[in-house]
Amino acid sequence: MAVIGAGISGSVAAYRARAALGPAATIDVFEAASHPGGLLSARTVGGRTVDAGAESFIVRRPEAVALIAELGLDTHVVRPTGRRPALLATGVLRELPRPTLMGIPATVDAVDDVIAPADRALMADESRRPLSWSPGDDVAIGELVARRFGRSVVDRSVDPMLSGVYSCHSDDIGVRAALPQLAARLDAGAPSLGAAISSLLPPPSSAPVFGAIDEGYRLLIDTLLETAGTRLHRECAVSAVRPSGARWEVHSATDTTVADAVLVCVPASAAALILADGVPEVAAALRRVEIAGSGLVLLALRDDLQLPDHSGVLVATGEATRAKAITLSSQKWSHLSGGPVLVRASFGRLGDPIDTIDDETLITSAVADLDLISGLSGGPSIGAEDVIDAVVQRWPVGLPRYAPGHLDIVAAVAAGRPRGLALCGSAYDGVGVPACVKRADGAVAQIVGDLAATG
Ligand SMILES: Cc1cc2nc3c(=O)[nH]c(=O)nc-3n(C[C@H](O)[C@H](O)[C@H](O)COP(=O)(O)OP(=O)(O)OC[C@H]3O[C@@H](n4cnc5c(N)ncnc54)[C@H](O)[C@@H]3O)c2cc1C
Image (cartoon, rainbow, N blue to C red; front, side, top):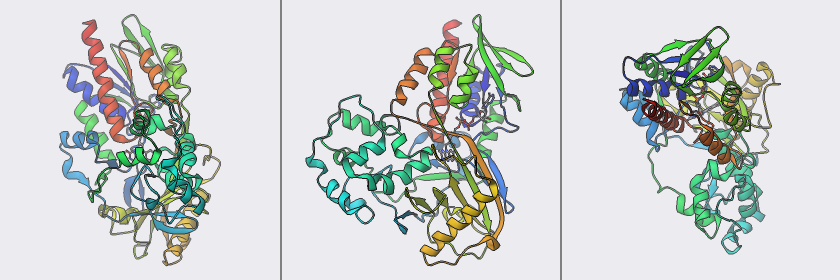
């Protein structure tokens, strides 16, 4: 068995493959980087090692929580302190609108103090305007919400949420792939957007939405790969995978490995290159997935600095900051409190890349944005003199764009999947870590089925 890519998707795939195939199977894991983990990667800032890609997981979904428990790591799970994120909109630091579904409110009450006056009237009237939707339709979330509720609801409530999760504006993200439950309600004939959202809002709860691992995601990756007992080939980028009779050739710059089955667990753009010769229909579908790059500035600040009493700040479209979000890590997570004050500022989205901005400028921007937010909440001014350490982490291949029509790509990949090869990663059934875990489980089940069928 060959596993290509050792991010969370490939690491889970290798672990599940070992459980399914038993101790005698050889599992080769090929990883282009010098270390496994992909977007689950750590950096050291101010003497603290912190997650420098994904930092948390949704606990309302079962997959990550169950996997961590299965590995015996549940004592390492930490919950946020309970401080809430704020919203920077119209130059003011505010409460984040709630309740919402990914920033989409059901009624005007949730967003009343933040939206434009004209959009208040539009929202109040929404249930009386006919909703044009046919089953199977797909449209950008931004377009749908702007049409029904007004542009200010998009800019000030939906974009701040989607920019973080997808590194895209809501005008770039399709309803059907990103919010399938909303598409289903609209297909079923919901009379208005407000009614559809209202039926989907979870009951109010004070339970935390997110969890994290006290030692960082590296603990999860290392445990998965150690338990899987694989042959991990580091700095070994796979250039092509081609069928060879009933088996598969895996080509890298230095070697060709022949395997009974292959799990392709790399981003869509890399998978398209790897499969271009061997499985061209699947590669053609994957080439249609755009990738949004992003980056983080991790700051360690002097330990007596007072920050706003929030877990972080999400930024509305059109605000004066360069950052799209700022996580006040030491205030969000108690295991990161004490010692230097830790902050992570997020930059970049589809159409707003950061690759032409140098590290120094990004760090200066992060400090300036933090200063702005501190000032808005009546806190101290913050400048370069308060910074103990700063690290820039870039993710040029960050998140796949779930454009309107994205599920057609996913269907084409499924239809073109040859026996003995399966794909997993964030491009298919959801971008979060739990969704990647679920997809990897499913990909291994497909391969096990294929191997059983061929004897
Ligand atoms: C900045 C950021 C923050 C995020 N925060 C969160 C969060 O807090 N919670 C959450 O649930 N999700 C979060 N996400 C999403 C989540 O991190 C990803 O969707 C998930 O980690 C993807 O895992 P993966 O294994 O599919 O891909 P990746 O992590 O991209 O791993 C793919 C691996 O394949 C390797 N590779 C690529 N090409 C080749 C090749 N040719 N040969 C061999 N190896 C190759 C890469 O080096 C990499 O190690 C975040 C994403 C970003 C960008």
